[in-house]
Image 1 (cartoon, rainbow, N blue to C red):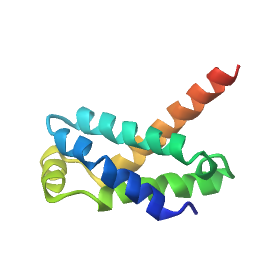
Image 2: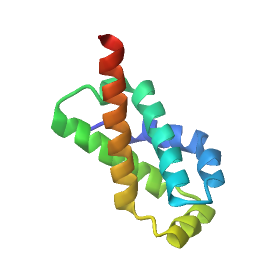
Image 3: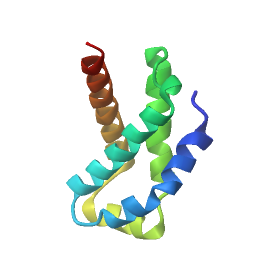
Length: 107
């Protein structure tokens, strides 16, 4: 599984972005996906391995984002009805879009 510290550090550096995403569930989704794609670009070796490992790494990334939220973000997520499963789904969507983009750029 990918080193959790890498994902966590990247999340904390970009925490300000998440704090600003207060208006809607879609805004939070977009911000999570921007962070996730940044992680996929920064740590490509963690996401170009066996599918089961990739899935574990994506889940770990989502859990890292979830666990590193500040109090204001927890309140925001509760108010908007956002759950860990949303973070997991959004990071997976971002991975799929990232891989599709990479495949297109290679062709």
